[in-house]
Image (cartoon, rainbow, N blue to C red; front, side):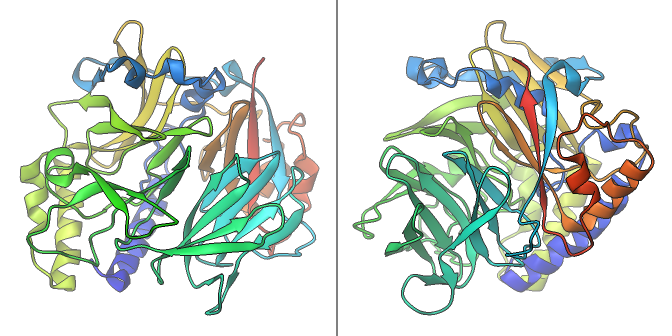
Length: 443
């Protein structure tokens, strides 16, 4: 699907999903939306508060976990207050020293927030812990060290450096975080969507949709040598790990952090989660279900290069997956000493699951109540977008277009007085920037 058609497809689907989201509380908490419009359940993310040492990982024992969805234990309601002790409102740049439309990605670095606005402000921005703007990292332009469409970033926490990928130019720019100084650029042969830096190695997915190479073996992961751009290693064949389809239908996050040095990698139609840690890249967990999407399902997409035909085929596939209640799109993955949490789509409905590493049991959760933010649950609401899980809590974002709804809830007395920064939220006007919601784990 070409860029223009992909954009139209995303707009159409988002419009449909917005209608779906505005249902009763049951459906709202089922996490309907895909493309990561709807956030992962706070319950699952909370388990990441435990130690994230490398010793916890199955990969260190050459063990692959198997999560069997067909025999999963069904769970019902969960209260956020069982996991979180507080929620804090963090408006970004209340003085409007920078104007943003959305937060597409966020990472925490030395108590500061680094955020990407891919579509509106087109840049990567650094804020302090109170949301005050510090600087923009890099800038839009055609000169040295300037990007045109920043699509993702990743951080080398030891050196204090940030890598920003320009989707249009197929270049990765490197900057010093503290000063914003431009440090260099690397051209990439294969276009990508998401990156992760681990112990001196720069990993990324491969987006073949605009770069079809007939007869060439296609892979899921590439390891890029920033200082020697011709040195690229490939991992995991598409034919073996993604039912042979090399496109990207659901472009959410693909790397899920385990601390700062390692991550788990997965995307839309994969049933295997990959562990990435330095030079180690190996299978970590397989999700098993008789309903999992198969190669026959994906044959609906065909092999045509006609963009209109591709778009219609994609719509037909989504309808087919919904009608057949196929399982697909593993996402929102986290790990601690006891559990592995993840979410997936079942037809057009989202579900979150928890795998117990000690018993081998998988649990699936239907609904949750945010009784940390709300004293009384709204019957309908926009669910904040999941951004980032740290070792102390979870960050979500509210888009500017969702702020009037939240202010209405405040005016109706639905938002708890204990919410830290509640008054800041109530004082924001229609031109405000996105707002971060930080849920802190219980001690």
